[in-house]
Image (cartoon, rainbow, N blue to C red):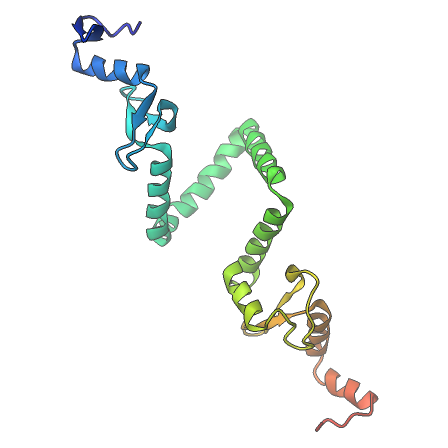
Length: 212
């Protein structure tokens, strides 16, 4: 039995500790469930974090804590990243340099998580990373562009067997996004733009007047 319990009293035919703090600890360790004060649901003790200082479980469950943290981060994201970004990056580099085993363990964990994802989810995450890094748009914005074009290439008007085969066309000088193109139209347009007058040369070769 708990070594903190020093005095007991009988209540309703059962023995309970008399010390208030010990009573709380005793109940938390013996109860099968606990009620979360935020979602008001009865959950197992394992669903709550334990305070390392006093050994007591927190009043909010893990899910409610995570939800609250996500909401706070979303609301204060710019300020948080501005404050902790450079420090965290530098701290992480130093930590992994001094602890190669921790680095290998972290990499192995990420790889295991990635390999466990369905193929469709992995493609979507790759697409999200690519769109944000190269063009500064989200997957939702990309889908809105595709819906506005009715799922067709903005130049040739042909559909694609798979939606992810659409390419984001943008101006290389200004970075302005112009639309979604199939691979052939995107490659051809890029080829024409690289050399000034190349399109006119092709039209002249084909015998087509430039004014048409």
